[in-house]
Length: 130
Image 1 (spheres, helix red, strand yellow):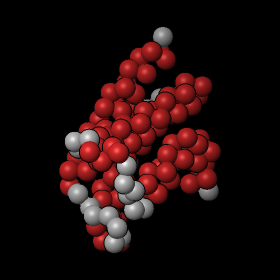
Image 2 (tube, rainbow, N blue to C red):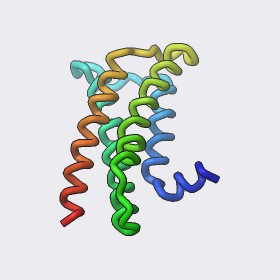
Image 3 (cartoon, rainbow, N blue to C red):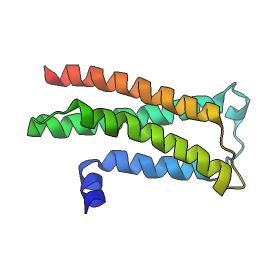
């Protein structure tokens, strides 16, 4: 019931979470972008930044209607959960797949993406408040 309610309240965030898990656990195809320096790190940064922005947007949209904004809930759901998910994915890549390897620097890029996403979320909050 709890998970179903979260999926209902955060449909885009839920979709992104599933998409990130899938993309991070399947084999990486060769692309022309493989020649771009640190493309893997940029990809992690953008995925987690986007996820965090969407989480913040959905949270703010919902709480603006209910007028029950809570910083603690936003920080846990919008920042801590994506960072933990990034760590779990890196562990899953290292220990549960044969086609991927966990990388500490991917985790760092995930976390930096979350941080940037939170900053954008705070800007969204300031804009939506007005």
